[in-house]
Length: 160
Ligand code: SME
Image (cartoon, rainbow, N blue to C red; front, top):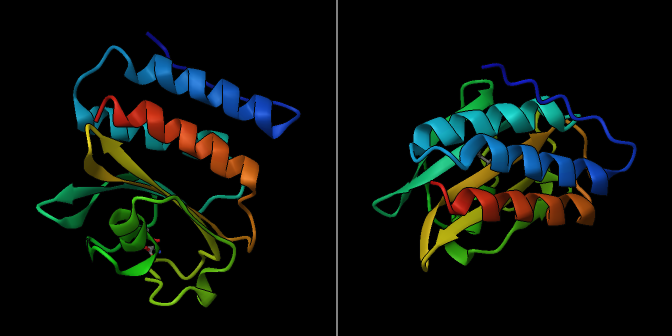
């Protein structure tokens, strides 16, 4: 079997719709969380332009621990409330940060990151982890990206 998900769409809304259906297709038949996180990170990395890091931090006994990702090696453990990922975990609210250098307590794993979006993944009232997407371009993530990434988070929450 080959997986050839090359998604090119003229407008972001179509691109996110295609990305969401490709993600559904990739993860819906599989129950292994590591496999699903690994494929999701690869799919997002291959699809969204201008990224330098995409991946997961898992909630392991109240601490965020690095999961499957694409990009440079990253911080392994992040406490709830620390940095963009930790605030997303604590508040369970999507964090869309135009300029990470202006975010109090931002954790600079990769100095190439300038903007970031972090989506909390919640199932049955439990925080499973977060999806973290970083860009080298300040202000890379729009409201449309936030809506699209939140949709990806809904799909992932069901299979992690
Ligand atoms: N910048 C993140 C840390 C994770 S890495 O960017 C991969 C933060 O402040 O939460």
